[in-house]
Image (cartoon, rainbow, N blue to C red; front, side, top):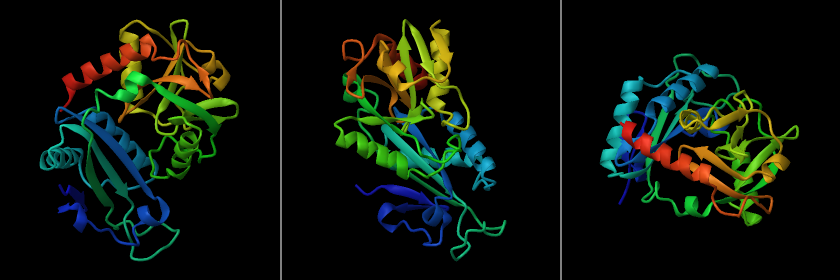
Amino acid sequence: MTRTVYVNGEYLPETEAKISIFDRGFLMADAVYEVTSVLGGKLIDFEGHAVRLERSLSELEMKAPCTKEELLEIHRKLVELNGIDEGLVYLQVTRGSAGDRDFVFPPEDTVPGLVLFTQNKPGLADSPAAKKGAKVISIEDIRWGRRDIKTTQLLYPSMGKMMAKKAGADDAWMIEDGHVTEGTSNNAYFVKDGVIVTRPLSNDILHGITRKAVLRMAAEAQLKIEERLFTIDEAKEADEAFTTSASAFVMPVVEIDGVALGDGTPGPIAKRLREIYLEESVKTAI
């Protein structure tokens, strides 16, 4: 079945979708994005993603292509048109095209680009990977300094995923100045003696929408949380670990750099937080 996608105001078969070769998202990664999960045909944490999108656009002095209400309507229509029960909606906003390549931003009246498409992911919530747990390796973090802006500059995270794959692992945690920043596409946590430890918010990491929700739910469950810098060696000595992201929710981590955590299976806190997050998110989905 051919997907219907959204490109600059039009719903089109994916085989007919086109953008200008001069679009700055294509030429310079001058673009931001969001990924919203769909469970039961409804959007998970849409409001949080919309708010973060507004922040990313503001930080880059980029115009919004439409209102939040219009964006919600586009999401819902694509979910309906493509029959998505469990899956993802990818959204990308670019600075548009001035008709040629130039490092200088295009004129202020340049129309921003807006592209959305769905990905069908049956079994997204009941993931076999979450039951098994993920193995991660550590790599140097050499990305730019504004990771709090969700840009499409994803070459190094993609390379990190491939480094992990070549090492027989599932993902990589990045290290800067001796401390873990985050995973290639997720926020990182470990648990020691019942305490959840994760890096505090700053320009160094993405302000995860799932991160915010999971930490709130953990606090409501009266779990102790420490937001502080931590080393990879600390994480290796943890009782358990996990990551959070919009597409994988809460993913247990069972091994770091070849060192098994606990008994090498998903830990109880990670499993419980995944259950709580999915239960609450489905209730509030729109």
